[in-house]
Length: 296
Ligand SMILES: Cc1cc2nc3c(=O)[nH]c(=O)nc-3n(C[C@H](O)[C@H](O)[C@H](O)COP(=O)(O)OP(=O)(O)OC[C@H]3O[C@@H](n4cnc5c(N)ncnc54)[C@H](O)[C@@H]3O)c2cc1C
Image (cartoon, rainbow, N blue to C red; front, side):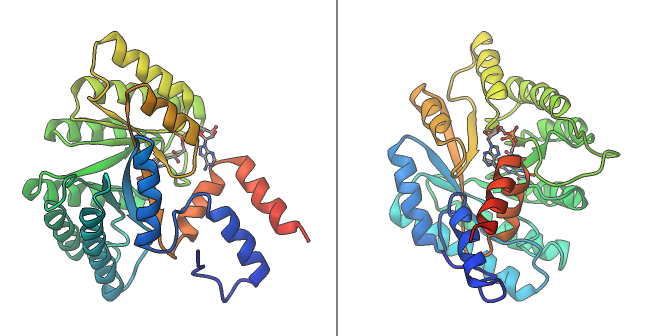
C-alpha cells in the first residue's frame, strides 16, 4: 500500500506506519478492496466500501472522488461482490459548498440504483458537520430512497436527531462516535456512552428501518442480541457492522450464528485521517505504533 505522505515522512518511519495501517485498510486500489471483499463474502460477511479521503477543499478533487465512486459501483457490479458504499461529505465537497456536495452525493445515489445492493451510507464526521450532513441526507432521501445516515451515540443532540430520522423512516447506522468532541456537546465517559448507545439501539430495533448496529463492543453486541431475541425480532431484521481488521473472529462468529454482518472496508492512498482515528480510539494501538516507531 502506498503512502500519501511517503515522500515527506522518513522512508523507514513511513514503512512502519504502513505496516500498521495495512491492518485497517484493504489496499491502495479498488481492485485490492474487491479482493478483500471476496474473502469476506466467502466467510458470509457483506461489505460497505469507502474510498478514503476527507476535508477536500477543491472542486476538482471532490469531483474526482464522486467519479471514483461511479467506477467503484461499476466494479461491484462486474465482480458481483456483496457490497454497497459509504462516503464522507467532506470528501464530496462539503467544505467547498453545501449544494455542490449535495449534487455529488445525489449523483452517486442515482448511479447506485443500478446495483444489486443500491444502498449509499453517508458517514458522520465531526460535530461541525452534523447539521449539514443531516440536511444533505434529508435532501437526498426526498429524491432517492437508497441513502441512509449515521448517528453518533456520544453526541448529546443525538436522541433528538434519532426521533427526526425515525419519523422519516431513515435506515440509520448507529455508532459511538470517533471524533474528539468537547464535554459541552458530547458524553465522554464510556459507561455513559454505552448506555446512550443501548437506549438508541433499542429505539432503532423496535421502531426503525433495518438499523445497523456498528460496534465491536461485546457488551453492546450481547445486549442487542438479547433485546432482539426477547422481542422475537428476526435475525435478519437488522445488521451488525464492524470495521475491516477489527475483531474478525467476532465478525465471523455472529455470521455463523445467523446474524447479518457488514464490514466497512476502506481503501485508497489517503488513509492517514482514518488510520489516526483507529489508533487514537485504543490505547494499545497507540502504544503499538509508538513502540514500532521507536524500534531501531
Ligand atoms: C461499521 C462502522 C462504521 C462507523 N462509522 C462511523 C461514522 O460514520 N462516524 C463516526 O464518528 N464513527 C464511525 N465509526 C467508529 C465508531 O464511532 C467508534 O469510534 C468505533 O467503532 C469504536 O467504538 P466501539 O463501539 O467499537 O467500541 P470500543 O469500546 O471502542 O471498542 C470495543 C472493542 O473493540 C475493539 N476495538 C475497537 N476499536 C479498535 C481499534 N481501533 N483497534 C483495535 N481494536 C479495536 C477492542 O477490542 C475494544 O476493546 C464506525 C464504526 C463502525 C464499526
